[in-house]
Each structure stands twice: as C-alpha cells, then as structure tokens.
Figure 1 (cartoon, rainbow, N blue to C red):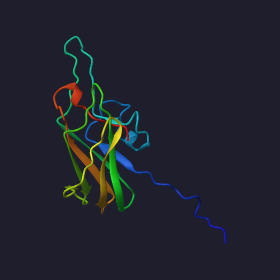
Figure 2 (figure 1 turned 30 degrees about the vertical axis):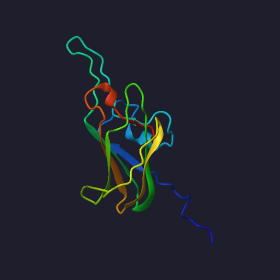
Figure 3 (figure 1 turned 30 degrees about the horizontal axis):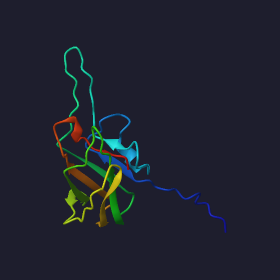
Length: 153
C-alpha cells in the first residue's frame, strides 16, 4: 500500500550563544561541519569614530548551546577552537545540560583539550536527558583582544 506520509524530514540541531562578535559569526555556523574556518566567534572590533576610540576586547566568559528536537544520548561533545592572533583556547570549560528550567553542570566531565588550533576539545559520553546541552567558558585572557574564542564547528 502506498504511503501518503511524504518524504522523511531531517531535523537539524539549533545553536545559540551569549554573544556573537559579527554578523558572519552566528552560532548556527558551528553546526555546518566545517572545522577549519568560519564558525561562531565572540571576537569583535569596532573602528574609532570622531568621538570614540577603537575597541576590541574579549569577554570574561561566554556560552554556546546546541539543541535537538528530542532527548538523546550523546556519545561525545566536541568543540574546535581557533588559536591565532586574536583567538585563544578558553582557560576553563563547563559542560551543562538543560533540565527544562536551567542549565545543570555535568559532574566531573573528562575534558580532553585540543592539541592545537582547529583540533577538537572533547567531552565523551554525555547523557543529555532533555534535548539541549551547552558549553560555558572563561576566557584565557579576558581583557585584551587576544582572549576571544572562535569555534568553527
């Protein structure tokens, strides 16, 4: 018997962040699978005006989150950070899951830090009961421009 259900629809995850530094570094760019360029960034740079000086400063900390359409077991969460003249690895990372009202930190996550730029920082075997997880980090160098983070995927 033929089905009238139509083609299967793939549901893509969503992403959000506390701050995006430019229109071309929005959180959704973390989910495109490209790990060597693009992605989300909290780096911003504002040129000087007649009244104000130029500004480029990292936040002391930021967060990003990823959400799915349903609860799932996550075999591994990974983030790729760019290290260059304006981006650095964070000083610390807190991995959390959403309990329906707030993010709850994962207890004793086993974080494996990236060995270099655009290499994965990994947290294995995270159980995310609700369909959302997040990363919060503290900048390695919060005041200068060199403390910004960029996560290409």
